[in-house]
Length: 186
Image (cartoon, rainbow, N blue to C red):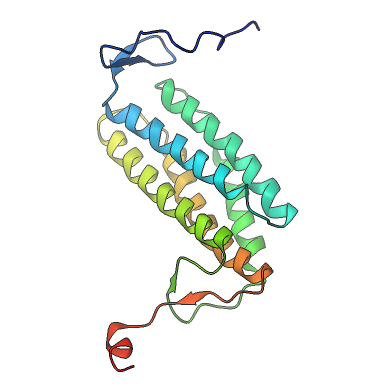
């Protein structure tokens, strides 16, 4: 395959454009580049989560998701290309069911927090939602696979569940939201 990334400084982006995978040059502030950056930030946030202690089944799921997100970034880099599909979404739905099965039902809203790992999972959830919103905006004007949007929607659900699961395995309860009218009476 060669040394495709051996030259890091190319100066080709100095004028504010960057190349897509199909060779076209676009402005670095284009919505497509923004969407790619949001997915990259999400992948980096999951990388941060992976520095935390966690059960191996969660770790393995997160590693596979990092690969999926890299594929999604590639898909966004090549307009018209489709890599993420129904099987990816089904896998996320299965993971949500698996990790949610042992959690107590929610009766209250929860706040991001508890353990550091859970807080980072919630951070990844919010970054995921931002990436999803960006892809929705992009799809209003350019071709984007519906599966890309659906994947991020399911992934944010999974990150919510994993935040709760990571608290549970650490013996920490969810941080419950207390309504303002109840807090003010304390």
